[in-house]
Length: 259
Length: 271
Image 1 (cartoon, rainbow over the protein chains, first blue to last red):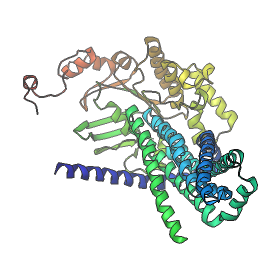
Image 2: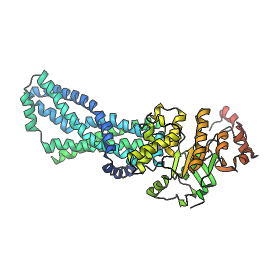
Image 3: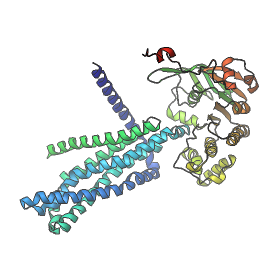
């Protein structure tokens, strides 16, 4: 029966963790109101969370687009439908790969950095010092980082898709010699704004919200030690990745159901 | 105006570490007069820093109450607590300087966040505070570029930035070389006298603690073991207090952490 007790312990721990995260969120969202009066705090974080993630998103987007160019071509060419390569690349990117891969990259690059930064501020008593100076760390430290994550993620996902389309074009038109006009024309006729583009935007908004929430929560509740910050950073990447993939499945199922 | 700026009565505080329940404070009464400098001394883990946390309203007692300038800190709403904290300054043991801000911005931080003062006024106030601790010339250095003694002085300037009524110092002498220690001790004493603030210094450093304080309290295992003027405490005959003041490795405060029988442990009669 020892395994049952251990399983129960793990379930209780997970539920407690979820409960703490749930209680934490309304406080953070209320604290974001301060940013109307102090937009400078948000802009600063948009730079470190968003702009600093652009390079990895552009490089990854380009390679993924090029890979889709090859894979799409070799699948479509058997059916004589290689002129629809642009449509295939666009649908893959806007509906799935753009939001999902950007969210995974975002969790690895910006999410882990957010957790580590906040966790270290906690471990070195900087958050405590702010409280002693009558400054609420939720408003001053957590809220700008959370909101910056929510804003930056959909923009980065859009950038990923755009660069991915260019990557697909480079391979399809530049290397595999399909017609450039049909690459763009198939995309224009086949991609639906409501079903495809909007679906992708909704996904990236949800992923941005969830990844930013997990990152700031784990940092704020990290144990005040080097090992504690390290564990919190790992938890951010793992939990955010699993949450993104799980939510992606759930949202895809719902969106398919509606179609 | 209250005679005592800090008035703590019958304080009990426990921590649950998961394995054991630690009784950090056991029935402590503490009164700090306005303008006084109190040194709270004692060995590690005796409850000194816990007491600072209670005075700052960061921790809450299990039993008893803490009043700051007549206002009870128990169940105080966050806004009211922050109002009171604007009248408190705190210097942390590890300085707790904001690592991404330079020295000037660290000292300016509480002023900018809590007052609507114009930028030229903030600048002058910060330079005044930095000049007091002798670091006006280091205003644009980042905390990573400071020595331990300099960082402690910046933390002191920041603690005094809002001209508080009460300043709390958590182990201000730990990890400093003798010269820096002397500078910090002199600054703490002089600023207390010149600015008329009340100071509570938590320290393990017997020499510096006794040399600067008006009133000394020695804590042993969560209780007040001795208190009075520096001379009175230095002349204490209580065995636990003597062991602490004389720095003896063993005595009433045991060298060994409670453990099962040594022979049983070695012969394999383990739990």
